[in-house]
Amino acid sequence: MIVRGPYPEIAIPEVPLTPFVLERAERWGEKAALIDGPTGRSVGYRALAESVRRVAAGLWKRGFRKGDVLALYSPNLPEYAVAFHAVSLIGGITATVNPLATVEELTRQLRDAEAKYLLTVPPLLERALEAARAAGVREVFAIGAATGATPWTELFDDADRVPEVAISPREDVVALPSSSGTTGLPKGVMLTHYNLVANICQVDAAFPQVRAEDVVIGILPFFHSYGLLVVMNVMLYKGTTVVTMPRFELEPFLQTLQAYGVTRAYLVPPIILALAKHPLVDRYDLSTLRVIMSGAAPLSEAVARACAERLGCLVLQGYGLTETSPVTHANPEDPARIKLASVGPPLPNTECQIVDPETGAPRGVNELGELWIRGPQVMKGYWKRPEETARTITPDGWLRTGDVGYVDEDGYFYIVDRIKELIKYKGLQIAPAELEAVLLSHPAVADAAVIPSPDEEAGEVPKAFIVRKADVSAEALMAYVAERVAPYKKIRRVEFVDQIPRSASGKILRRVLIERERGGAA
Image (tube, rainbow, N blue to C red):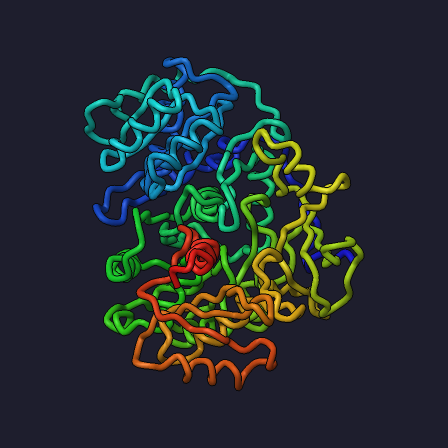
């Protein structure tokens, strides 16, 4: 059963990304495109477009050519958008790197991407230089004063010297983010100009409520496809003002929301959980905030409802993957059509089906299976990994997401968990995310993660790692869950911890907990 969303098909132009995103920059002129939240430093739309051209000219002058890779190893800053679009303008590829990456992780990504250039910031320079030497990077640039790297300012050349580079939107890769690596080593994901232009058009068609007057918080990391596409590219295409923040800390985040009158926040579940439960929130005026969109990991209905009621704004959930540019599903921005537990219907031009993960046979309404997706936002493939690409994308273009879910009678989709993360208890499958949602509804629980724990009799049993907000016993929590789920789904083991390991996009790093559990450290 192939499911399409409630939207009409849209035309997607086959054009290079950067001229498309910045096509109205001259019209918006001095209006702030990007503001550095901590300092208030602002870049207007006209200045942004000019800087993109000047840096593109500077890169070309230094030998950067079409198809070359520049790695961006930086937190969110206005310069991130300039660098990304400068590389895009001359047919290059940006490999986006988590600023928390170690020297070893950075070296591996630089080698894998065959990066010739690296752009970073002074606090990360020592790691950047060590990794660049190990990976054979040609030149390192730094945004700010830094010994051992070429200053960012030296990249600015005459904007009129940008060469005309022929770009094939469907074939030419523009972004090379890593897949999240929550279940294994990260892989480079090839996103083309057409992929990103398509996803911008799809999001724009589904959310006509986004206006140039909106102020958007840029807390989602730009190295992640959710931040890169939705916060950076869609919002610049729409003429909004994006306020960047280099990292998430609750109080500075709340201060920034209040100080800049943020109207839209694209977030991940751990931040929404803090907005729903943390006492600090009551000290700030967040009355300008109209919409919160959650993505990157499952958001429980209880947390979504608590956040919406506390802040008096809409809380919507969407869905996507790095491999789909990333957005494929989203709840509409209409209170009457929001289903808090659902990730929403598919975006325009997006087809979905739920299938048996073993046989590929289609499943019906409200039947669990693997979600498959087909659409113009589906990646070209994994970088230098044709076998993995062939395992992930079927010959007729369906992307196997690896996520378990179902579709209801209204065409709204629900994500239950990752196929690889399901707990096998006496042959029965249990979704950790379902148990985590129950645990998070307990007033004494600040955060929770559930993993399979080896068991001689059952094979695996659910074990919960809990961050407490108030005093509560393991027995009380196990009883609380037992009252709310089928008997086979009960939590059998509990361990209290100081924090839950998460990726930068908010996904629980279950493999870290599983390795710890199987290593006998629990």
